[in-house]
Length: 348
Image (cartoon, rainbow, N blue to C red):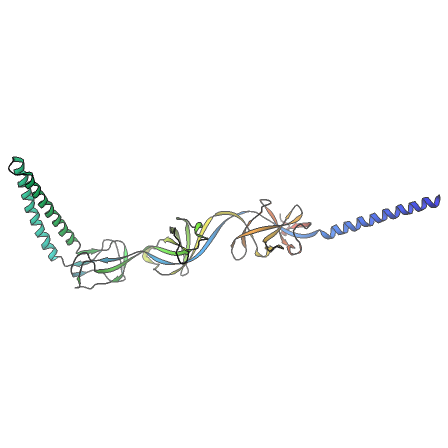
């Protein structure tokens, strides 16, 4: 009987010892599987994405002034390449024949006016028919039209600058004889100046009239705004034409210069992270590793902008407003791993 009891106790002790050893081994395994990482708290920030484009400067207005009357140029008051204010006279076409014609038409007008007045008085007294009165009125109105036409021709012998501009080219010299429609000078308006660029169909919906733009021209920075967005794509390139208006006092910026343009989109909330913290999961999806409930969680991201020293990203799945991103040890852990963590520089 004693032998039986002794055997039972030995068996019980062995079983207890076995389970105790297994428990210790399990604890060691758990301790070995909990990895240590360093984390940093990230908070959302306001982010404005800058779209970058290339373009070129362009004069806001280009006009070729043409003669509206025939005649010889008797005076020339401009030089090619100089700037002139609106209303400055450029040339004078010899007005002598126009002055003579105006005097002739003035005399005819006075005669027709008197004839009409006489006819009107006789009509009122019953000595002139209504038909004759109508003829006199028609003759008077024709004479008035001829007089006004001759006055316009005389006025058109003086050619003026229509707006503040630069004389880009001259087509006449003193003494030249002009016919109606002959070109006189090309004038260009450089204030404001336009920057023209082409936008792809993927970006055109982000560009709106009135948006502010930053422009770099020959290492100088300027501020402008979008003043035109085409609604029809080019048939060959499928791009859309956009114009930016830029103030250009003193005509410092000339037409045809290459430009670098940045247009800011609307504000958005995003996280800024170092490029070294971005990784790929087994399916090749871009994302970051964060700590959530003491486990590693892989969060897919959308890169909004690369600014050189990091990325502005948007989380495709947001688990919390603030996230704990793994900054050290992320290459040794995978999604779902149990971890213990400390904060970077012991600052939470």
